[in-house]
Amino acid sequence: MTPASGPPVLIVLTGPSGVGKDAVIDRLAERGVDIVRPATMTTRAPRAGEIEGTHHYFVTREAFAEHLASGELLEHAEYDGNLYGVPRRSVRAALDTGKHVVLRVDVQGAESLRAILPMAIFISLEPEDVDVLRRHLEARGSETPEGIEHRIATARSEIERARVFCRSIRNIHGRLDEAVDAVRDLIAAELGRAGRQPITL
Image 1 (cartoon, helix red, strand yellow):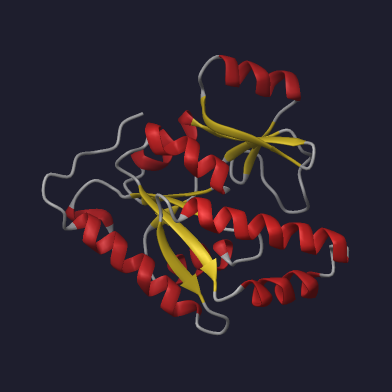
Image 2 (cartoon, one colour; image 1 turned 90 degrees about the horizontal axis):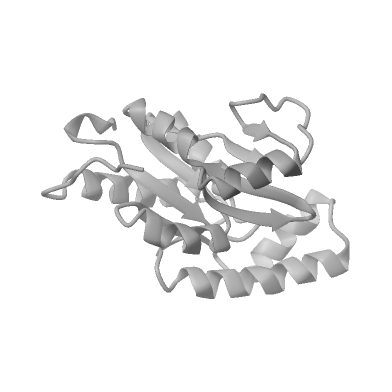
């Protein structure tokens, strides 16, 4: 699947932590969907293997504040003491490639983007149930039991908020390709929609 039948599709993908958003995006690419993820901006330090301008733009809090004040950030949020945002330039550059663009954001970010990107496809990836999500978080081994329960409570709230404006897709354990097929179907339907116009920022 390529964007040859019209301007590229912009997808805003949200869902609770641990639901498999990255796995879906990676599998879309593996199956030949021509997609690109714009680099986001963050104040946290780079992790091993992360590349400036590819994964993120790593900036100081002062620089982040300047970008925010200038209107350069489409949305922003703070998580675990670090700031994250989506720069307009990143999304413009991604759209200019002609590939479909995927923005991976939390539900707060998706809510903010609704008014700015009305032509985007908003997708909420959901677990088959929260117990599966709990087991996945436990398997990571990076959270305390209290931290996991906090994430589960947050996940329940995020799912309900996202259902208000997103297309819901369930990511069932062991059936990743079904979720990927559902995303592909939404892209195909959008490509076939009459009167589509390029997304401008």
